[in-house]
Image (cartoon, rainbow, N blue to C red; front, top):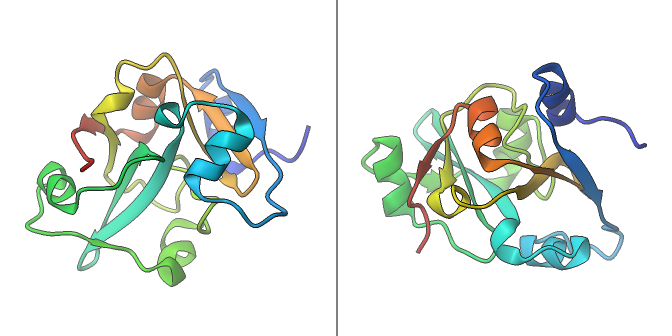
Length: 156
């Protein structure tokens, strides 16, 4: 078993069941659709973690890899007038994670987190384990509990 990521340690500590999937990232294909294909899961069950901000306030959105975040819906969910995507170069500083290995679990702070409503009825979803090449499979409601997330309509 490879090294546990911070996200896995948090799930272990909270006794939340999960399993892991790993994939080869050496070809540089780490976008969500490529990951879904590599781990052999339908894209609607594989979710990407996007970080947005309004001034100094950060918000985390977990949406299916095949979808695009609707910033208007996201802002509404977050109770902000508008949101912008956090610049990739700022991701690690704020979250502790890098692009392609950004888990909604175990960021530097517990930022307000929202999971796309499409996850609510899925038995399990796949999210990043916090490093490139590794994914966590878990119950979306348990993901919501551990990240104190709300389900919301977030995609275009």
